[in-house]
Length: 363
Image 1 (cartoon, rainbow, N blue to C red):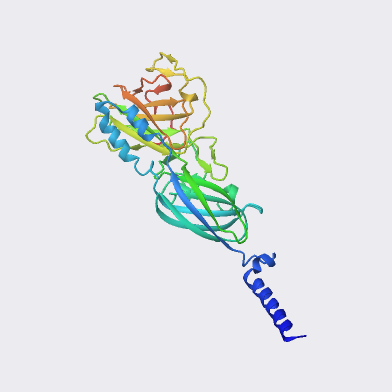
Image 2: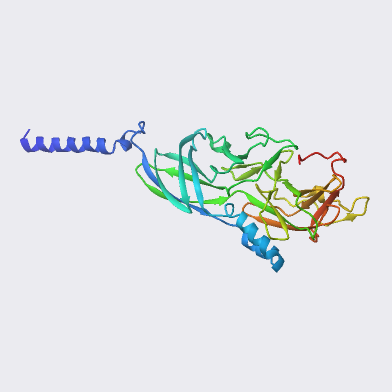
């Protein structure tokens, strides 16, 4: 063998050895430790909401401008495309949907880019924003893709569980955003994904014109909403007995009207029975037969000077959807009852509510 031939053989063997070292991931299929690939993901919050339109439409008179400004200020941290924190999980699609990788970031922005070094495989990526500062909702069962959900906390136990009618929950304190993105990480190939996060909760506001009466002791609750949101399949879960949410009194100092706002998951999205409002005169002011058949409700309680409590149930037949604000307007009468001019809202009034034995809500 000549020296020239020997040199060529050495060069060939050297080249093969370098290929094994540099490209070992593609030559040794069973060892994935060297197969990690950088994947860049751009995250952006997409706020799709009717808030401005609803406030401008429902609270448009000069007398209502003050309560409109107060409500808008109250919802500043709810209807916003600003993400404080982000929980980012990657699940193995080909296995048993266990989480393969997880990161949390303080985003503090509308959009951000993060780079992840991931082994080659098919993933389902789930992203959740603004859970950290939400005192009423937590991310649960997120070790598996199809179990991951946002769940409300029980007022009595402080843990995610079904609630009883006597439980009252606080309103959500942040606008929650989620996204899902299938990803196929191919060996040796880097990709950039664009993930858009959309709002998962909503808000309902009751604006009351006291018409010169004392409404300082009024308390308002809402009910009929979902208790959890499954992130992977983007569906809402409802308890057999809906939770009761305590609406927050909006700061309307210096304004004649009172406003109560509840931030919660959406209602059922199926239209209930006919919204025709039928009023029957009884010993009570009036009863609307459809109030208890609505998709969701406001429940207002006013304590009278004689110590009795008047309960008014406003039944809303329009679904409250994610990202939506719905405003219902009513006015107070001297017996503590609320009335509304909205003929699509069912109304039921119970005078002397405590003596009637209705103790669904702890006042």
